[in-house]
Length: 135
Image 1: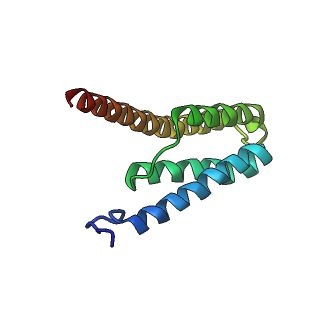
Image 2: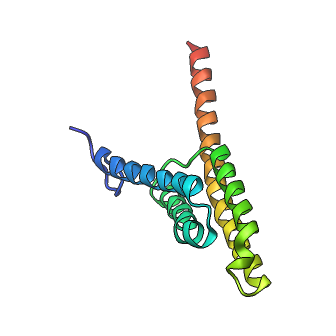
Image 3: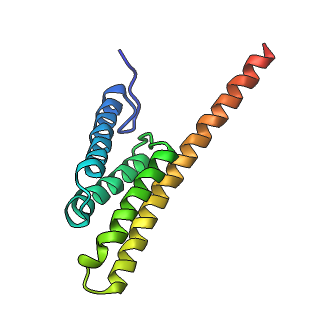
């Protein structure tokens, strides 16, 4: 039987639940990018909320973030669509700029988490290599 800790994700079952949710979220993000390139429907109603939820799960629930290259791909793809279509969905240019800033900040937070996680993996690899050299 697997040991349980005191935290909400300190057991295998809870981690599986979280990880399954992450898979659903990343599938939803990919679906939005593939099939719905509309800012008002796919982007603002699904894509960006999914990005924010993914960020929260990575930041507060110990979920593994996507690789930095994936975050960059998502960001570039969405901002391209946003820049092309946002003027049709906001009455004022200042709103377009303000919303874009929020989008950029959201991706920056996810990217920072992804970079930090990748750096931790690199550090683990170095530690394992050094331990192997001692033997």
